[in-house]
Amino acid sequence: MEGYSIERHNKGYIAFIYGEDAHRYYIIRRGWVKLYRETLDGSQAIIDILPRGHIFGETAVFEHNTYPYSAEIIEPVDMISLSLKKLNILIQDRPDFALSMLKSMARYRKQQDLEIEHRSLQNAPQRIGCFILRLTPAHTDPNLRVKAVPVTINLPYDKTLIAARLGMQPETFSRALTKLKEHTNITVKGATIEIHDLEALIAYACSACTSDFPCQDLNCSSCCN
Amino acid sequence: MEGYSIERHNKGYIAFIYGEDAHRYYIIRRGWVKLYRETLDGSQAIIDILPRGHIFGETAVFEHNTYPYSAEIIEPVDMISLSLKKLNILIQDRPDFALSMLKSMARYRKQQDLEIEHRSLQNAPQRIGCFILRLTPAHTDPNLRVKAVPVTINLPYDKTLIAARLGMQPETFSRALTKLKEHTNITVKGATIEIHDLEALIAYACSACTSDFPCQDLNCSSCCN
DNA sequence: CGAAGAGTTGAAACAGGTCAATCTACGTGG
DNA sequence: CCACGTAGATTGACCTGTTTCAACTCTTCG
Image 1 (cartoon, rainbow over the protein chains, first blue to last red):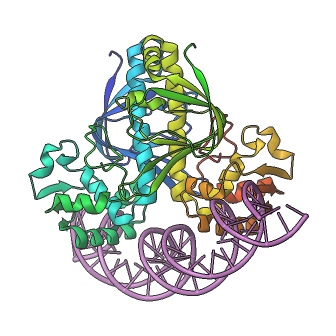
Image 2 (tube, helix red, strand yellow):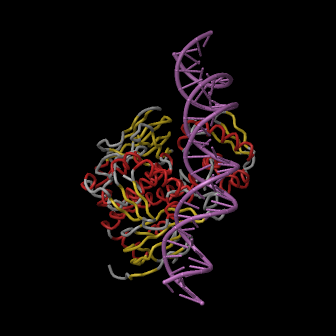
Image 3 (cartoon, protein in one colour):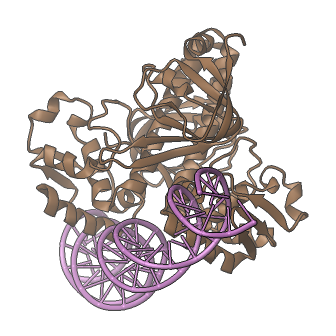
């Protein structure tokens, strides 16, 4: 597709803010992006934190060309910048394009359903457990589930932000991580986590979920399964 | 569109269950439908409760023709039953159809975002306040905001179910409604609620939201704005 | 070496959940 | 028309998880 450009930004860069006139949307090639909104009484509501492969800002075409959230870079990104005007034309003119967008929207919708579910059915340690599970290779490849312990993963961004992403306070996150350690045989050192018993972690974290781990969805950012 | 039929069902009827082979999707003409899933440890997770005008079951086309949730009638419905196979063909063949579906999906997605926001930023009485606001005529017509007090509304289904919809226990709902009464000058008698000061209710319930009341979206079932 | 920010820990307050008892409204059968 | 049974709704007492606020530690980076 012609008319694209690559942008590179550092932590703290604001790609756009809520309500702004929208001209471009983005695809993340590397790094992490936070989507959020400000509440009327001043605090931030985190909508999602997206990794490589995800699109953001594209829903502005359905919102009178206004961004429905703000977007901030939280880990250095490379992102493809594309024209919303062209996207609009593509959606209208190319059925296959509209269709694939429809599919990705449906997938996202399902994730959001799961997200709501998790927030109301899981406690803090379990939510952290799911978050960690999503970072393992076993998340997308069921074959890796049986072998490969210990699994070592790195938290992709600040703990404070992970806490916000999971809908809890930093203090709660810290305490809940300690509790998770007591329950599931993991080792935590800074941002590095070693899982010594994958099955135990799954059993502990996913007992309140509506489906089994793993979900095998490559684009899944919100579910633990 | 040919090939449709009208179905009429009473409270308790299960339209379909999670995981079932999907052949039809539905549009609600009258009544209320509960979408839910069972968790691994046996309880129910309410996904949404839909009123007149909403579609359900249609996302099965993106889920290998399997229903991604169960659907139960909670207030007597008339619903249009349509073929998923034909929907699939329509989506592929008719760009305008795919497009309108894309739009409705985007709208739903936005609602879900708000839903998550509400669950983490609002307390129980505020969530009930928002729920009540959604039932007022002022929700869709900003002109009605200034005049027309007292506003009288009727709760559309059981309080226990409203509680589940809002992610809380029946006992919590009852207590939170009492607290709401103390804060906002409303009168509750059974399923009937009278709002004597609309502005006060909005101020109390929406202070933690990210946008102002009302949202003016005719199909909005999840936001309070 | 020192400042700043992130992370952790403790104590107290609070919201919501749980369990049990009671109350109420409403439809049924006598 | 009234007594009864049932399901929904409410209330009380208690418990648990999370938040809040404050103090302290650790890491990083100039």
